[in-house]
View (tube, helix red, strand yellow):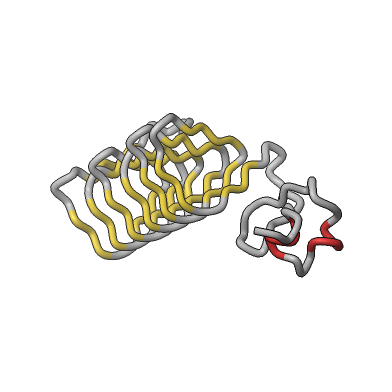
Length: 148
């Protein structure tokens, strides 16, 4: 948690176009068309709608985000969260009911994660139908035996 106790609150009646930068923590309940850069923790409330990227120490999401979310420590996605974008953090918590479309990178060591194998459709490879070299140009049909 952020030590200084400085917390800015943007109420649900507010609509902001532009970037928000804070040296403390932020509670966002309104609408934002722009990015958030927060040295402390960011709380995106249930009524919040964000169109832009978020960078903070930790991010709690209860509202809607159309953009990427990067946290130095943790991302906590509450059941009401709707996230369309990539997320990156050391730790991740996801409640039942979350809508998330994007890529996630969760790495407790904080370094870059090793790349993972993906199919031509961008889904993780099952790895059970031969080697990646064997399946490289076969697509899903080739991995499943070729007859569908």
